Image (cartoon, rainbow, N blue to C red; front, side, top):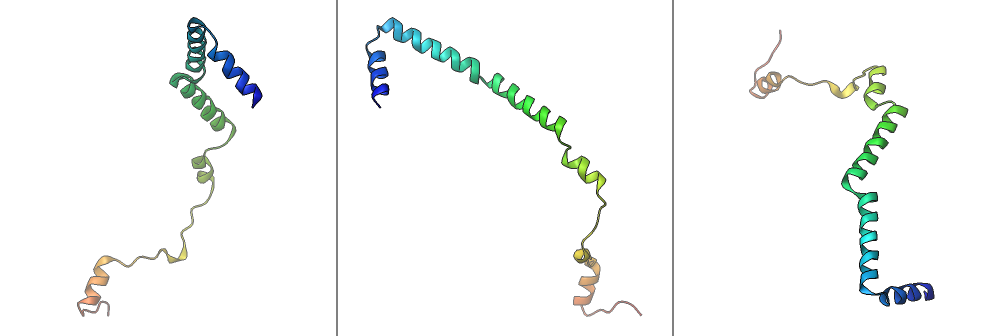
Length: 91
């Protein structure tokens, strides 16, 4: 904590022009390193690298056979309506 106290005391004793210059330099640093365009470029590079190095889920899915679960049988809507009305279907 003594180092932080000393640094803050030093900044508070700077002349206004020096404080202004320090603030301007800090702002320029943040704008250069963390601008929206810079961050978007970094995300684009990351996604490009990931897509290049790893197959997409769609490509993996295309190589697997499609299977349907056993419980996927569906009753047609007209069959359920006719059975509730007391009608029988079939021979």
